[in-house]
Image 1 (cartoon, rainbow, N blue to C red):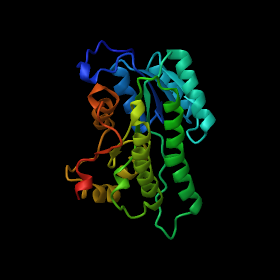
Image 2 (cartoon, helix red, strand yellow):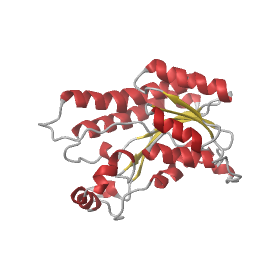
Image 3 (cartoon, rainbow, N blue to C red):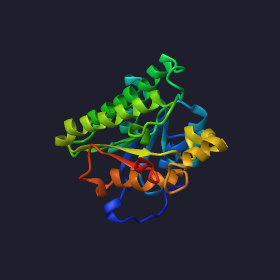
Image 4 (tube, rainbow, N blue to C red):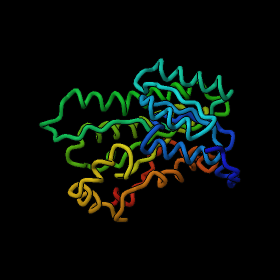
Length: 255
């Protein structure tokens, strides 16, 4: 795939903008890569899955791919430097990396709880700070993929929900700290999507039926359902939005 001749409304224009996408080689991340790429953004994509990164590189010409661990501060600093070296600028990033370890509280391994916070919170912090340190004086945009689990209490989600709740509040704090530098920090909170970590759950009829029963729109999200909000938050259209977790959830948080 090559960059299209898509001519967007200036309000949503991402052409020539440079973004780092963490966790971008599969699931929701890959859908976001495609959406930004098709609108002319230049992208650096990092992930731990080297094979998926190689496939992604073949699909989207001109992107930078790198194996990087979001939990490692030096690794994040390195992908930022690689991005600046290749593209000569940086306008922000979107973080789709994350893990989920569902288990009832009495069966939850404490190490799984720690790892949830390590990836979903510490990793998000490393990503945010590495980018924010190298943004130009004009500022930039940082977007995290959070979850409806930051506000709804799903049984068996003590580790995931707690970490995503922490992520949403961290977004608020970073947004306030960096607002004077025009660094806007936001999150998108999807409900259950038929992609990435939720594919197996969606395929299970029992889990699927229960999950759909609390989504008023009666369907699971698809990767492309996140695109519009991501584009808004990264473009001029989102220039006065910061510190928010915006739920793209088919109404899940209304139940």
